[in-house]
Amino acid sequence: MDACRSCKSISGEDRISPGPPIYTGKHWALEHAYPVALVGWVVLVLKEHKETIAELTPPEWAEFGVLLPAAVRLVKEYVFSCESQYVLSLNAAKGFHHVHWHVIPVTPDVPKELRGSRIFALAGGKDQYPAADASLVTRWCAEARSAFPGLL
Image (cartoon, rainbow, N blue to C red):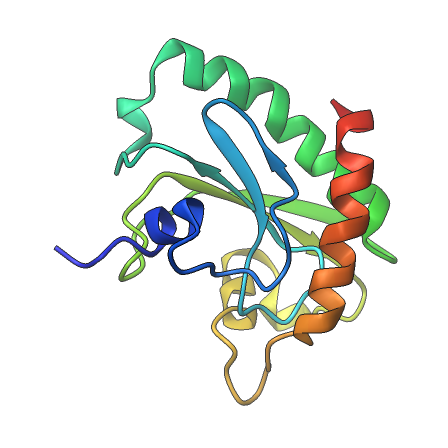
């Protein structure tokens, strides 16, 4: 099995996001995804290692039910020109077999050919779509961290 990058990031051993955690609850943490081309692309990550959503307990689902709508509102209100938001859980990438949900801002500058599930072309810091500047992500996370409790 691959080393779980989500577990390492949540524990602080090897953080993925350059920014601070936006929110840490009992079962879930809200982080900025990285490397991604869009500032404001957040990930709601289960703090305990589980590989499928079928493994979630009622308390985990209950907290998720409060946090996901707040995360969507955060992206809608704090990402400039956000037209819509995608919410996806794939849990299949190498090193990320760990329950997590992406909340992705769709802005006018997202190319039409990358709408829908093709939006993941903007993840991974590829040459054509480089990662957002880490300092911008860090600043956005700090602002989001201050705003998030008011969205709950």
